[in-house]
Image (tube, rainbow, N blue to C red; front, side, top):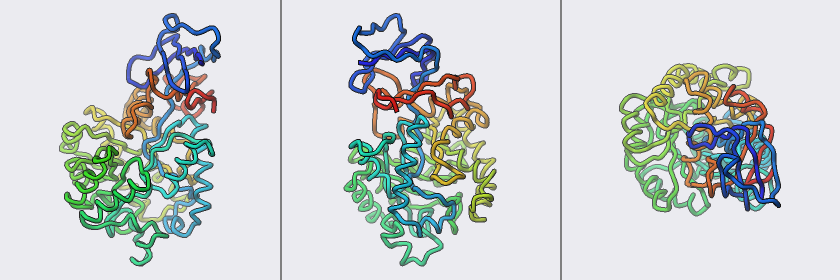
Amino acid sequence: MKVIDCGTLVDGTGKKPLEDARILVEDGRVVEVGPAESVDAPEDAEHVDHSGETVIPGLIDAHLHLKGTRSMEPFDWIRESSELNTARASADARTLLEAGFTAIRDVGSEAGIPLRNAIDEGTLPGPRIFTSGQSFSQTAGHGDAHYLPYEWATSEAAGGDGIVDGADECRKGVRRRIREGADLIKIMTTGGVLSEKDAPDQSQFTDAEIRAFTEEAHRVGIPVASHAQGAPGIKSALENGVDTIEHGFYIDQECIDLFEETGGIFVPTLAIVYRLVEHGAEHGVPDYGLRKAREAHEAHVESTKRAYEAGVPVALGTDFLGPELVPHGKNAMEAELFVEEVGMSEHEAIVAGTGTAAETVAADDIGTLTVGNHADIVAFEDSPLDDISNLYEPDAVYKGGETV
């Protein structure tokens, strides 16, 4: 058994932080937590002293890609070796864990499932991975490689099994991902920024196609995430059973009402758009991507504010890929933007990256330091409750109660 004494404990549930707290850990899980004076420590337990520090649950990035790429040019993503990218992605996974991200939701990559399995079996160090495997797009949609001939874009080498049209193909695609072992399904119900020939406000997939995705996924108890930037695509996703909306550039009041009606969670990914606008031109982002990011940036921030102020659950997700522009390990940027741009308190931003982010996956034992949950813990000498940028500098990270 391990006893962890905490100066200030943020448990991830949204409750007021607890001063002079104690956590008991056994077999990698929290068995008791509360004020230190009320939690008895067995004499033979290992003691860990963070009594002068702020302790929070392990952070969760609810929207990233374990692509292993080091380029922001989409054509490079096709040309690069999948073996090289998987090797790089394994290094990124270790970096994420060391940065305090003890769980991640990978919403579209070839490496996600094999990396998850290697980490789970103890071969590689890394966070708990919840992955969709390859995402799904319609022909000419956000996930289609527009710059390639159609025959190439639909090939297995280009990830072409993610291009589906018609409800039957969508349904069969989900069944393939379930067979592969995906933890969730990722679809695209609008165009996007880094796809060449579509736009964020253009809707993609029909109602019947979206329902096919959600019916098959929910049949086996896994959630569906939708890349959805324009309001019509957000609405069609929520109306047809999608669980989480990714990006949400142009949220209107009807979208807000649907979030409330359906219980959907919003993962805005402010960080990647901020980086594209501020520094994308220096890192080889195509002109069409820079233009669309600049056009959407102000509306994106306003949509996130609108959702937050309306009480929509907002989860931390960066959409980071691995290149220098959007590197894994700097994922706390999203929490920083929540505070600086959206108006969240530091405590609310931490909850967005712990308890709320955990709700985006089909797991009920991460994200909060409550009895029965994994003892995924991060301690900080300089409290992120005082300055959210302190999230970048953890003093100690524990996954399942073990020091990283």
